[in-house]
Structure formats: C-alpha cells, structure tokens
Amino acid sequence: MANQAKIIWQGVALCAAFFGAVALNAQAQQKTPYWASIEESEARMRTGPSTEFPVKWIYKRQNMPVKVVAVHSVWRKVEDPDGDQGWMHVRLLSPKRTALVVGSSIAALRETPQSSARIAWRVEPGVVGTIDECDKGWCRFDNAGRYGFIETDRLWGDEAP
Image (cartoon, rainbow, N blue to C red; front, side):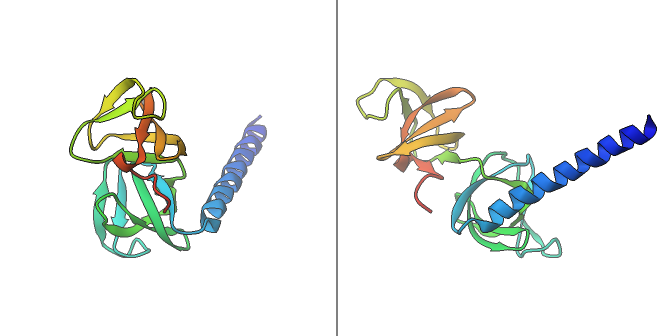
C-alpha cells in the first residue's frame, strides 16, 4: 500500500513537472512584446534577470497587466502601467489577459460595444479586470462578474504590443 501511494505521488509530480515545462516552453516561444498578468499576490520586479539582482518593486496586485518586452531564460523583462521596467521570474506571470482602467474619470461599461448602448456598470480608474472580445476600439471587460464593453482608449493592456 505504501509503495502504491509512493508511485501515485511520483506520477503526480512527473505530470506537474511536464505540464509546467510545457507552459514555460509556450511562453518562451512567444514573440515579444506580448501581454501577461501578475499571477501571484506578491511579485518582485528585479533590476536584472536573476535573484542576485536587487528588488526594484514589490507588486501586491494580483492580475495586474504587464507587457513582456524581453526574455532571458526563465526571466521576463516586463513593463508596468507606469512605464517602469524590470525582470520577473516566469512563474510569477500568467498568460491571462487583463487590463487596467485608465483616465481621470469614471468609465462606462456598456451592454454592447457602442457608445450609444445602455450603461451596465461604471468603473473607476485603477480597476483591473479580464478582457476578451476586443474589436474595433472596444473590449469586453469583466471585474468580479460585472462585465460590459469599454472603449480601448480607457484601458492599459489592450493595444497591440
């Protein structure tokens, strides 16, 4: 029984390592620049591509969008919404598409991608949500189940990188 449990755990560990390597390989093959998001609740940006380099920023905003501008082994040089650049380990990043609402006023999330459509929700600058269905200047934006279409000029994380 103990040997059987050991074999099962070895199989689980092997599968996890395989799928982790596949995900890492997929990110390594992606052409820069491309969009990603911070996957962890705390992520360190460093001045260079190694833990030997000093920490430049500590991000405590899970799902915040970043633009990957360079790749070095398991490190990604990223740019944040403020334009700061530094290096993050690939395990801190997710390919999930997110965006940050920008501007100086509240933005409208509309029921359809038209400026004349009914307003479904309103969002403040600084709100982060997932995006999809981006087309002709609009993206479908979802924040905790509240979704609607928002103009892309009100987002950081959508424009073609």
